[in-house]
Image 1 (tube, rainbow, N blue to C red):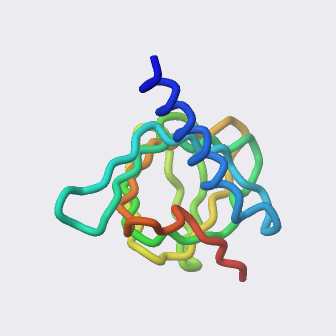
Image 2 (tube, rainbow, N blue to C red):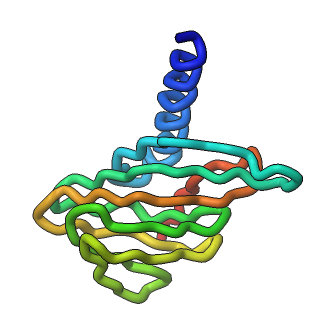
Length: 131
């Protein structure tokens, strides 16, 4: 029971921390961290998260300090990646390199993305990247 409570506390705190940097930069989608683990013998952490983007919203432009590998669970959105538009639909996957500036313009339905991030230990999961 204590282990479960501790894990739930970590997930709740990580969810809040993952969203906080964007508050002044525009819309922040809901990100729920499902798992997080340090890679043994390295300086990296792997994070599995589900991001939900509300209908017709655009997630503020940001970067990640490590690679993101993701799968669209539901919805359809247009990613603006370093100025290039790319439409991704449910059932498709994508990858973003570390430091790549991107934003996500959602369609008329809620979009859900399952993402795996590999980032340096102690780094923020995402950082605003204003125009």
